[in-house]
Image 1 (cartoon, rainbow, N blue to C red):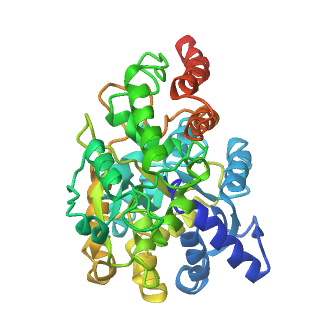
Image 2 (image 1 turned 180 degrees about the vertical axis):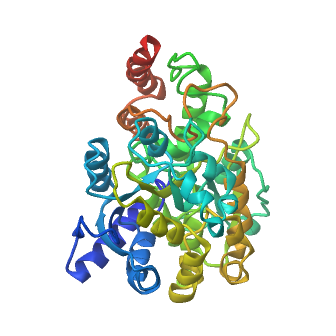
Length: 451
């Protein structure tokens, strides 16, 4: 989950670019009395830096709306957005939020509903937004509160050449047991090659993102619909033991510290035969300068008891309720999340840099399919089958596939991930880790049982 997606490389790349520009972490605040000057606070992912570079020439020159960007690393930008939006200070008209935060912010009336702007702007084509992404940015009141910049699910990436050399075939929709069996057979097939890479780095958006999808498909859940914590249930325990055993037996070296960036490096450098992670990684692995370009296959997220198990994540633009410049802010959202920006990005930067995973029409563009044809169908299928409101085998008390959509989850998920990462490192058993995790989760559940 952009996710925890592209974050590691994004931070590194963004830092380099910003330092080169001599303005690391810097931003701009425009004239508060100018109705055509808006302030945007956004995360420093590479795709965001691309739109920052293209805005003046391709948006401001046409609309007359000047955009003042403040670009910060993920943790910093989340803190700054929280400070400005929760107080409704109105310093920033627009901010980047994920589908984890949008429903929470909307419920607290910190975001402006966008339905009126959408209705008055038929060229935006709201129905072209992929349905799971569209739903994830729609709050419980049925109103739309953000527009996606890019989206992602999760799937299995594997080396076709290594499996073929072992006469192995990867199903389009594998089970986790099939994946584990293949991992055991390709582990060591080449010097230094491991069977699979799975995140083990602590963090609610690191280890807990893929592991929670495994828990879901094994039949487990964090909480029952009536807020009973279930982290020590047989299903949660079986899934966690499976994940920990798989990464300990056939996973990457240094697994307790490995996140998205580390697994991407291992896959790119030919150190692992398979990787279960964000669909957004596929474009990086298939880039023109990638050593593994053309050697990869893509399968849907492995399952056990559910029909699908991929996660859903998007970075989206939302307008602060307190903004006095909502009309100008919508003009920017309409362009940034629209078809025209994809055309500009494709023509100016190359079609591999188009922020994909949000619009159905993207997957009909011949220019995009020429570069991303090997993973485009698998990516779209993964996003289309993601169901944040029904990700497992039982009803849930909150939305979310790889997270639980409550404010407390960032702290809870990180604390639980630290316990399980410790089990991956061999410092404690899975049973011991989940006993501690159950206590942490039960404290959160107790608050909701009383409310």
